[in-house]
Picture 1 (cartoon, rainbow, N blue to C red):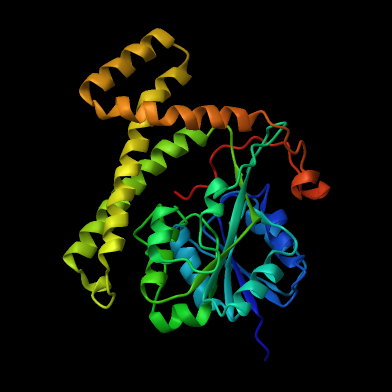
Picture 2 (cartoon, rainbow, N blue to C red):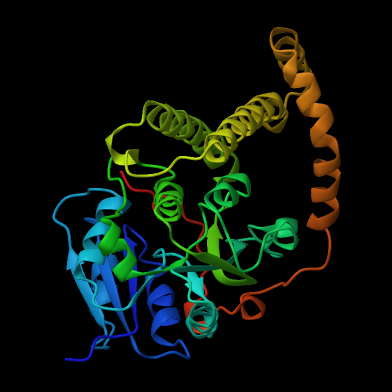
Length: 348
């Protein structure tokens, strides 16, 4: 039996409004030689029924009786995959139509084990969706055909959704850490490169990530807390040369990059502590809280000064002319929605 070129793995949890679009964005790729492996993590809405209604033999659904989290679902999907490449897709995101074809051409041309593209953000429910890319200006600084472990740390490449050779993961015994609830993509990508994977990035944003206006700030603060803990754990394990890192040659540059990452994350968390009170509608109280924090943590003064240019740049970009509807961002009419959901996509 001939195996497909690509195994698309989709972990799902309560994404009934978006899963049809996600799956069809994979099935409708210009590269048709693929399978779609969906692992539903005990959804309580109509996600499973919608998946079962899709009449395509390339779609394979597994239903978990209990909720285990996205890392468990992805590991299970990879075990069941038969394709040469593993492609990641979340249940409420979607792809540009020629994404797989373009990425695989680049990967084969450069004999890469991993290939990633940029990500465009789509804020659900906004008239002019904020669609800045994940890499933004950084993509002009990134080495196009050669990405190192230090680059993954320095440029925050963890959120990217790469294609990875399945054989590389199997040979190296690499998988998602199921005890990590946030940042598991970053850890796996970092470990792949530390184990000798070759990685390239194409600069085009062919992956569309959906976000919600009412959850961006809370998500940012919560995620920063989780990432700080994750970076601290990685540093501790690498410095102590714990079992999973014994076979990896940890160069000083990697540990140094993680230490810089930890400082940057800590500064980011402090910045959000400074600015969040102003978003709650009481300027006088917010100003008092900011002053108190600055007195307790003098570093916050320098952080605010450093952030001013970024804030101004963000405000200017925010008001530039951008796509005004789903059609301009590649959303087929039948998949568009006016819903304003809560954070139901998050695993419990």
